[in-house]
Amino acid sequence: MALETIVLDGHSLTLDEVCAVACGKAAVEISPSSAELLAESRKLVFELSNKGIPIYGCNRGVGWNKDKKVTKEFIAQFNSNMMHSHAVGVGPYLSKEEARAAVVVRLNNLLCGCTGLSPEIAFMMRDMLNRDIVPLIPSKGSVGEADIVNLSHLGLALMGEGKVFYKDGTAQARDAFREEGLSPITLAEKDGLAVLSSNALSAGLACSVLASAKNLLDSADLIAGMSLEALNGNVSALREGAHKVRRYPKQIETAARMRKYLKNSYLYESDPERPLQDPLSFRCVPQVHGAVRTALAYAAENLEIHLNSSDDNPCLLMEERDITSCGNFDPLCWVLGVENLGVAMSHVSKLSCLRSIKLASPNFTKLSRHLTPDDSTIAFSTIQKIYANMDAEIRLLAAPISMDTFALAGDMEDICTNAPLVMQKTKRILECLFYVLAIELIHAGQAMDLRGARYGETTSKGLAALRKVMPFYGRDDRVLSDDIENVRRLLESGDFLKEALGL
Image (tube, rainbow, N blue to C red; front, top):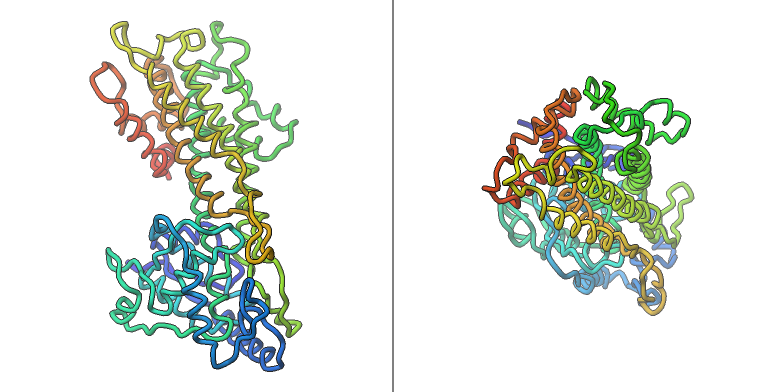
């Protein structure tokens, strides 16, 4: 079956498309207009350089060596030296999917026409993606003011000197190119800097983080609805009118989604035993999840701007036929968005933990303590330690890091964003939070089965999805760690939502 082909043009790439390319579900092509722009911008670089205009990374050095001239005779060696000297990334390699995301992001940025690099580099990056030749890129080392120490490994791969993922293993880039009939690139004027001076690694990671965050938040809405049924709670807090007067769009959206999930639930029937109001961890779900959706939307909006713009320095200005030094490699606008999302997700975690505590208490549910099926079973007592631990880790990881920096490169590079670290810690927040939500779902499902009521059209399907991977807990005769892992995988894979929503 042929892959979908995404046409890259430098201004229309979406987060979902990045994820599709990253997972190998889509091929890429460069639009004809972008190919023309690459050729024209390359001509402009030579035009300006031949006039003797100093160009950073072209006829001048980089970093602290910005004042050193680079002669035409030394260009190839200069670029080779740049790649080798900057290839100082350490730690585990990115996964193949993460590295593919970085490559497609950088490729699309290049198509904005602001680098003036050799067009064949862009076409080689296209070919590498389509033939699944993926550079091995270390995950650590970037301070988030362009991921130069990491993307230099992409540059080495283009030169045939780096290592790559290839055919279910790894290989030297030169060997993979030879097998595919490709030739390594010789980097010329401005090419080296154009390849490595980018935040593509961080942006690629961010695309994956935001996709995971959306899946998590959608799952959290449904699980919260199931917990409300498990509690025998009040649907009054979901009434449309109450949210309409508050006017926050994402709050209104969340409440509407939960009403849909709970359609035809027994909760809409009066019950004299039902308290007038529920604890805030149940009652304020639309407000809290709505606020998190607002944070997610901000991060996604600004990340998508980054995907379709130039973060190059120096920056070619085609209309003005000029080139200028700038600070467009600073990605703080969307890095702050992702960091804020991490803080926001800590609120999702806190509410989920509090709901699990309430569901284990007969004072709130009028069911058995720890949702035991009988007096001889312990059931969900010690499981509280897990979500308490996960929530503590989430709060630790939510602490901001984007402002921590040293003055580097001869005191010239004196700010940074730590963008990759922000992406990595937010990813870990989501990993912990999937466990927290899995445990809440386990509690909600157990309570729903014990209660045996008529549940919502969607929440009942959520219960059925849960029961496919975890049966009702009837006896202390199995390891709950296995159940937790199974339910966590159900959520993280997106299968829970697919089954419950019929996607």
